[in-house]
Amino acid sequence: MLFDDMRSLLARARNIAIVGAKDKPGSPVDHVGRYLLNAGFNVKPVHAVRRQAWGIPAARSIAELPEWGFDPDIICLFRAPQYCEAHARETLTLPRLPMIFWMQEGIRCPEAGKLMAAAGVKVVEDRCLQTVHAALFDDRTETFSCQRCGKCCEGRGGIVIGPRDLPRLCAYFGLPAEEVLARYAENLGGKPTLKCGEDGFCLFFKAGQGCSIHPARPAVCRAWPFFRGNLVDEVSFAMARDDCPGIRRDVSHAAFAREGFRYLNDYKLRGDDPTREGRALIVDERELPAGARD
Image 1 (cartoon, rainbow, N blue to C red):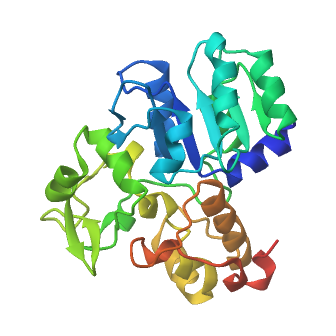
Image 2 (tube, one colour):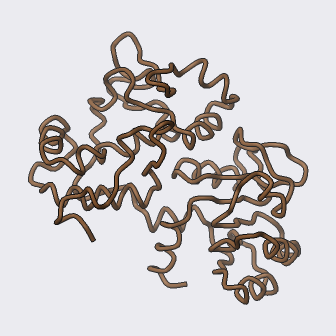
Image 3 (spheres, rainbow, N blue to C red):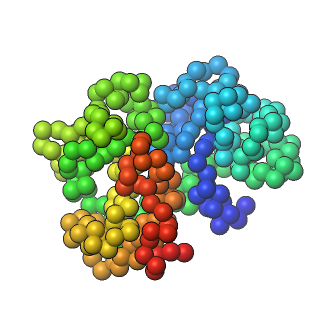
């Protein structure tokens, strides 16, 4: 598959079913699963015996995914090659076929590949999804480089825990959702938000160190400074640029908005539910300044 094709498909993908999922520390599937959750994907574990992984209930089979209301964009296999053809046939029974049938590093099955390709599904063999995604979506940007100063971590109520954030926090802490929310969140404006410490900063910000839960941080934290206000309003952008040392001083609003909107899309950070997600994540391309639209 061509580089641009792969990047385009992964940028569009949102839901990933991991077949053979388990959260055994140090195992390849655990490492990849946590990476994908950290990258903002909706992950659904699939395992015939295990009931959960990363704090997320597991489906028993690919065919059971619709019963969970889960339409996978990618089927990611951590299974021996001899089982892959059966998984391919099972995938063909889904009401909506995935975009990619991905066999992890060390796994090849020509029979499964032929079945999927004949159905119009892209096939990847013997490659690590984490490695490919990390290579295609580098976290660095031209207009912003985080200085870990903590300015964006100050103030109560700004860090909303969205529905896609909670499974990642559960996996990080090894706790059920109810306990994560009870320990670390408070309800403000009808939404769970991370608590602040006595210093007025997020509970997990440590001066001189930065975020102590950086791999599991909510989408709002991942998105800064590419918030809706900064992308669509030049005055808000100018204020953020003056206050945040990570925003390049010579960058124009149009360039910032263009890169920020692409960043939100690439990392699947844009929200669409103002009742459950941070409003800063909900932005429409039509709101961007003219010079920022593709």
